[in-house]
Length: 143
Image 1 (cartoon, helix red, strand yellow):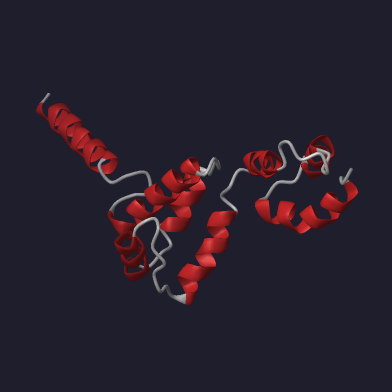
Image 2: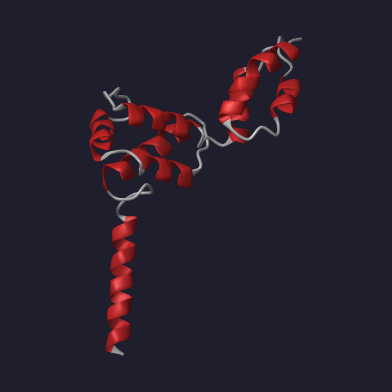
């Protein structure tokens, strides 16, 4: 009975400490992940939370601290490795939500057929693919 009680207390303590660390884990990397999720949400973008957490966890302690210290509107001086992770974060954007965001920019613009854009971009699985195809698609979908 005592062993079960200690196991239950240990499990509860673990859950409380993990949940107190934020979505991205403990430390500055977790704060960076939370900042990214919040910024994306405010911008109307949907991010894959697991992808963001995994990518933020790759940040060095130094780079993560610089990002946290700079805050969401800051522009910290980061290592080349951290700069490369920014591209990985971009691919955490949900492709469908990214297309929706692009189409919202053309709302009320009669020069672009947004149904055509949606049809042409549908099925692409990453923001990189969408960006790569966007120029050709825009030309094809002009009214």
